Picture 1 (cartoon, rainbow, N blue to C red):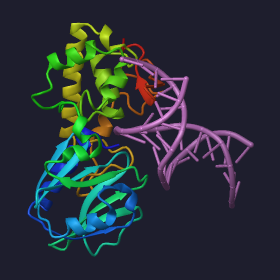
Picture 2 (cartoon, protein in one colour; picture 1 turned 30 degrees about the horizontal axis):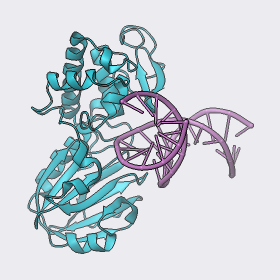
Picture 3 (cartoon, rainbow, N blue to C red; picture 1 turned 90 degrees about the vertical axis):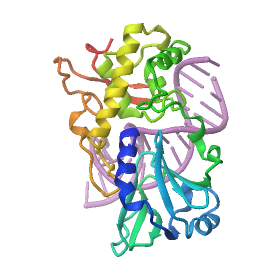
Picture 4 (cartoon, rainbow, N blue to C red; picture 1 turned 180 degrees about the vertical axis):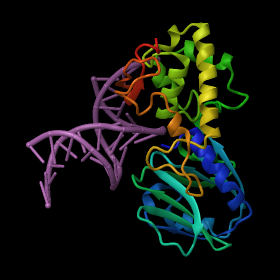
Length: 273
DNA sequence: CGATTCCCCTGATAGC
DNA sequence: TGCTATCAGGGGAATC
């Protein structure tokens, strides 16, 4: 479940190996993940372009190519983007391969086929799905406590739903939403407009610290997640609630599981009020 | 406006 | 042993 910390870790791990490489060819094995343009145009258009930079916005990876083109990639749940030597065999579920000019390949592997790939002009990023409507980067300067407070108070949704809404804040998914709410001591079903100033301050700090630690520990590897060089992350050992339903909280109480906003949610009924 | 459901897909797991 | 039902989950769309 690549969320902001995982996608950022992929970005950083790919960067030194990809910058300056030229895409010699692209091979599509499952066209369903290519959303724009058609598979034929995609293969034709991407050929010969140089990879100039790798950025990230929320959970989207942005490969800036020559010719003012941008390759927009979303890993969704089980997507993996890795660089390997071209002679290594293709594993199952490899849907897209970019042959590079140094004997390596950039491969997109995705068991569930939920991943998304767009090739668009640099000045037409709005053509790439939800990329255009993303809220601010939670680890960036535009995400402030004032912004968070304003958005929370004007809505009456459950806190969990708010945190998962990519148009409010970019990059938070199920893992980091649950962990941030635990750190803030807030119940996932709290109505956003009811939050007090002190609670919002705690939430703001919790969102920042949880995501920053996620990045520092190179992401959470529960099942499929690996970085661009196939390495697992380390944050899974630091999870306090996610995936721990039925186990005990540090306070001694058993952690509960409940579906909130359509997602499995784990929380401590004592620590999170 | 907000909540819920469906859908895309396949592997793991539980139940029979 | 082998089958089938269920679940997980990002996020957009449709529905209530």
